[in-house]
Picture 1 (cartoon, rainbow, N blue to C red):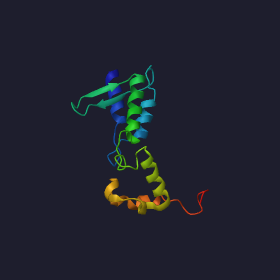
Picture 2: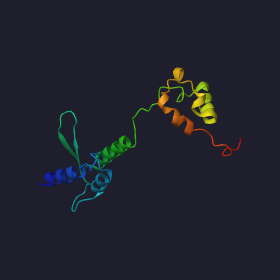
Picture 3: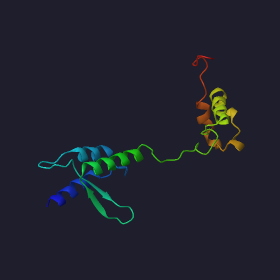
Picture 4: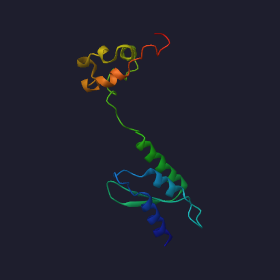
Length: 138
């Protein structure tokens, strides 16, 4: 009986919001709530994406590891960005010089054909220009 209650409480915590995204607030609140007469924090039901098997974690260590991993992914951990494979992200002198040129001249400083930066990001690079009078060395 106790296992069924743990599983139901854990499944309820994983209900998605209206947009189909995980409701992190509900997940954290229900995971951190300590049930009456229980020596564990709470439970989380984790469904394996491959086997579709539901596993209930109720130890504080496994609950906290699951929450931290889920929060890391939600905050963008492991994602790749458009500038990752460009000179803009390179920690070299050429990369630093490119970032300086963009700060002073915007998209005009970039040769889009050789820098691997997509042309559609020109407005982003223009927005990175230093505002005249806003910098100490201007």
